[in-house]
Image (tube, rainbow, N blue to C red):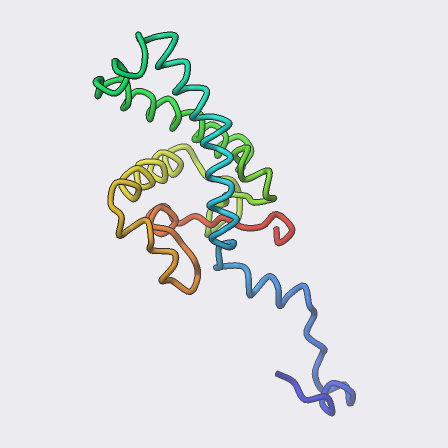
Length: 161
Protein backbone atom coordinates (compact mmCIF):
# COMPACT_ATOMS: atom_id res chain seq x y z
CA UNK A 1 0.00 0.00 0.00
CA UNK A 2 1.46 3.31 -1.05
CA UNK A 3 1.43 6.33 1.13
CA UNK A 4 -0.53 9.33 -0.15
CA UNK A 5 2.51 11.59 0.19
CA UNK A 6 4.55 9.36 -2.15
CA UNK A 7 1.79 9.22 -4.72
CA UNK A 8 1.15 12.98 -4.59
CA UNK A 9 4.86 13.68 -4.91
CA UNK A 10 5.06 11.49 -8.01
CA UNK A 11 7.34 8.91 -6.46
CA UNK A 12 4.80 6.12 -6.92
CA UNK A 13 1.89 5.54 -9.27
CA UNK A 14 -1.62 5.17 -7.99
CA UNK A 15 -2.60 1.49 -8.24
CA UNK A 16 -5.37 1.05 -10.75
CA UNK A 17 -8.63 -0.56 -9.68
CA UNK A 18 -8.59 -2.80 -12.76
CA UNK A 19 -5.18 -4.31 -11.98
CA UNK A 20 -6.20 -4.95 -8.37
CA UNK A 21 -9.31 -6.82 -9.57
CA UNK A 22 -7.26 -8.88 -12.03
CA UNK A 23 -4.76 -9.86 -9.35
CA UNK A 24 -7.48 -10.58 -6.82
CA UNK A 25 -9.73 -12.63 -9.09
CA UNK A 26 -7.07 -14.44 -11.13
CA UNK A 27 -6.97 -17.50 -8.88
CA UNK A 28 -10.31 -17.25 -7.07
CA UNK A 29 -13.40 -19.00 -8.34
CA UNK A 30 -16.78 -17.33 -8.23
CA UNK A 31 -19.14 -17.71 -5.27
CA UNK A 32 -20.42 -21.12 -4.25
CA UNK A 33 -24.13 -20.15 -4.28
CA UNK A 34 -23.87 -18.87 -7.87
CA UNK A 35 -22.23 -22.13 -8.95
CA UNK A 36 -24.91 -24.18 -7.20
CA UNK A 37 -27.67 -22.16 -8.88
CA UNK A 38 -26.01 -22.65 -12.27
CA UNK A 39 -25.78 -26.39 -11.62
CA UNK A 40 -29.50 -26.55 -10.74
CA UNK A 41 -30.40 -24.68 -13.95
CA UNK A 42 -28.30 -27.16 -15.96
CA UNK A 43 -29.99 -30.09 -14.27
CA UNK A 44 -33.47 -28.78 -15.11
CA UNK A 45 -32.66 -27.66 -18.65
CA UNK A 46 -30.50 -30.60 -19.76
CA UNK A 47 -30.80 -33.58 -17.41
CA UNK A 48 -34.55 -33.54 -16.75
CA UNK A 49 -35.63 -33.70 -20.43
CA UNK A 50 -33.11 -36.50 -20.99
CA UNK A 51 -34.35 -38.39 -17.95
CA UNK A 52 -37.97 -37.95 -18.99
CA UNK A 53 -37.29 -39.15 -22.54
CA UNK A 54 -35.29 -42.13 -21.29
CA UNK A 55 -37.89 -43.12 -18.70
CA UNK A 56 -41.10 -42.72 -20.65
CA UNK A 57 -40.13 -42.93 -24.33
CA UNK A 58 -37.27 -45.44 -24.44
CA UNK A 59 -38.26 -47.49 -21.40
CA UNK A 60 -41.57 -48.65 -19.96
CA UNK A 61 -41.75 -46.25 -17.01
CA UNK A 62 -39.98 -45.37 -13.79
CA UNK A 63 -39.77 -48.93 -12.46
CA UNK A 64 -37.83 -50.08 -15.51
CA UNK A 65 -35.57 -47.02 -15.32
CA UNK A 66 -34.84 -47.47 -11.61
CA UNK A 67 -34.06 -51.14 -12.14
CA UNK A 68 -31.68 -50.52 -15.01
CA UNK A 69 -28.12 -49.64 -14.08
CA UNK A 70 -27.25 -49.26 -17.78
CA UNK A 71 -29.97 -46.67 -18.33
CA UNK A 72 -28.73 -44.50 -15.46
CA UNK A 73 -25.08 -44.69 -16.56
CA UNK A 74 -25.94 -44.02 -20.20
CA UNK A 75 -28.01 -41.02 -19.09
CA UNK A 76 -24.96 -39.72 -17.17
CA UNK A 77 -22.74 -40.24 -20.21
CA UNK A 78 -25.13 -38.44 -22.57
CA UNK A 79 -25.51 -35.58 -20.06
CA UNK A 80 -21.71 -35.45 -19.77
CA UNK A 81 -21.23 -35.26 -23.53
CA UNK A 82 -23.67 -32.36 -23.75
CA UNK A 83 -22.00 -30.51 -20.87
CA UNK A 84 -18.52 -31.14 -22.31
CA UNK A 85 -19.69 -29.79 -25.68
CA UNK A 86 -20.90 -26.59 -24.01
CA UNK A 87 -17.62 -26.23 -22.08
CA UNK A 88 -15.53 -26.62 -25.22
CA UNK A 89 -17.68 -24.54 -27.58
CA UNK A 90 -18.60 -21.56 -25.40
CA UNK A 91 -16.99 -22.07 -22.01
CA UNK A 92 -20.51 -21.85 -20.57
CA UNK A 93 -23.42 -24.18 -20.01
CA UNK A 94 -26.92 -22.66 -19.97
CA UNK A 95 -26.72 -22.42 -16.17
CA UNK A 96 -23.33 -20.72 -16.22
CA UNK A 97 -24.58 -18.29 -18.85
CA UNK A 98 -27.70 -17.50 -16.80
CA UNK A 99 -25.51 -16.34 -13.91
CA UNK A 100 -22.77 -14.69 -16.03
CA UNK A 101 -20.19 -17.35 -15.17
CA UNK A 102 -17.58 -18.90 -17.41
CA UNK A 103 -15.32 -21.95 -17.19
CA UNK A 104 -11.72 -21.21 -18.18
CA UNK A 105 -8.32 -22.84 -18.04
CA UNK A 106 -6.44 -21.51 -15.01
CA UNK A 107 -3.16 -21.08 -16.92
CA UNK A 108 -4.23 -19.75 -20.29
CA UNK A 109 -7.46 -17.98 -19.18
CA UNK A 110 -9.11 -19.38 -22.34
CA UNK A 111 -11.70 -22.09 -22.99
CA UNK A 112 -10.69 -25.56 -21.86
CA UNK A 113 -9.55 -28.34 -24.19
CA UNK A 114 -11.42 -31.58 -24.90
CA UNK A 115 -9.19 -33.84 -22.74
CA UNK A 116 -9.38 -31.36 -19.88
CA UNK A 117 -13.19 -31.22 -20.21
CA UNK A 118 -13.43 -35.03 -20.06
CA UNK A 119 -11.14 -35.12 -17.02
CA UNK A 120 -13.21 -32.42 -15.33
CA UNK A 121 -16.47 -34.28 -15.91
CA UNK A 122 -15.03 -37.59 -14.64
CA UNK A 123 -13.79 -35.79 -11.53
CA UNK A 124 -17.24 -34.22 -11.13
CA UNK A 125 -18.87 -37.69 -11.16
CA UNK A 126 -16.31 -38.96 -8.64
CA UNK A 127 -16.82 -35.88 -6.45
CA UNK A 128 -20.60 -36.31 -6.54
CA UNK A 129 -20.27 -39.93 -5.42
CA UNK A 130 -18.07 -39.01 -2.44
CA UNK A 131 -19.77 -36.57 -0.12
CA UNK A 132 -16.49 -35.31 1.36
CA UNK A 133 -15.21 -34.00 -1.99
CA UNK A 134 -18.54 -32.30 -2.72
CA UNK A 135 -18.02 -30.05 0.32
CA UNK A 136 -14.39 -29.22 -0.51
CA UNK A 137 -15.02 -25.64 -1.80
CA UNK A 138 -16.58 -24.67 1.55
CA UNK A 139 -13.22 -25.27 3.24
CA UNK A 140 -10.95 -23.60 0.68
CA UNK A 141 -10.22 -19.90 0.50
CA UNK A 142 -10.11 -19.94 -3.32
CA UNK A 143 -13.47 -21.85 -3.49
CA UNK A 144 -12.13 -24.43 -5.94
CA UNK A 145 -13.94 -27.73 -6.27
CA UNK A 146 -12.22 -31.09 -6.60
CA UNK A 147 -12.74 -31.04 -10.38
CA UNK A 148 -11.26 -27.52 -10.58
CA UNK A 149 -8.17 -28.62 -8.69
CA UNK A 150 -7.56 -31.77 -10.73
CA UNK A 151 -8.27 -30.22 -14.14
CA UNK A 152 -6.69 -26.83 -13.29
CA UNK A 153 -9.77 -24.80 -14.25
CA UNK A 154 -11.58 -21.78 -12.84
CA UNK A 155 -15.22 -20.72 -12.86
CA UNK A 156 -15.18 -16.94 -13.00
CA UNK A 157 -17.73 -14.16 -13.32
CA UNK A 158 -17.70 -12.90 -16.92
CA UNK A 159 -17.28 -9.27 -15.87
CA UNK A 160 -13.80 -10.17 -14.52
CA UNK A 161 -12.58 -11.60 -17.84
